[in-house]
Image (tube, helix red, strand yellow):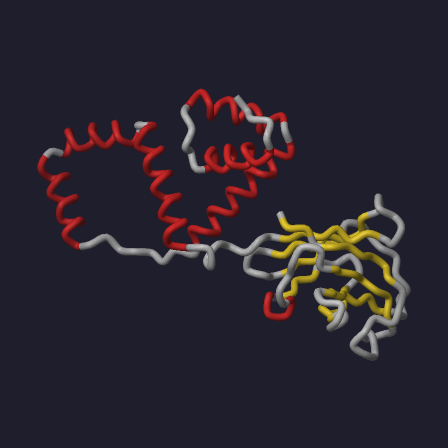
Length: 229
């Protein structure tokens, strides 16, 4: 049964992605995901979250004695070993234990300081036109930013479009570079700096080559705030 509480649903989907549910419950959750777009997005988020967490783990080679034991086991009774291996491979209880062990290992090994950073998105819209998105900003767990056009804009040929962000009003806006209309822009993490929920991003129309100072001088074309996924 799918719980109505949102926190319980989040936990249910996280467990489902790890394969911790039985066949019937997993099938019920899959039917729910097919019908609920928000649940489907949350499942995708959890998959990316755990894949990102796994990437933080250093590979550990098997000890030589374990390889020797495996070789002896295969050589001693290949047929019996293969039959036993097939049984284990198809065992739901085994995979539940493996998934649970991986979850515990991730929590213990990564700890609170090594959990992947949040992923952010921003929809940039023309001021006063909430239903007119023009660009999308995505910030990866590694901090890299991608600016993607959602429409073919019409900008004056003798002006430049400049990309800005504002994290701390006391420090003022910071330029992230010039934008070629209709073309995506990738900004590496070392230029983006830290990103947090509510952080402002905007595109402004500036003189050729960009603003002559460290602040926007022209009108705002598109603006939006970061939302953590």
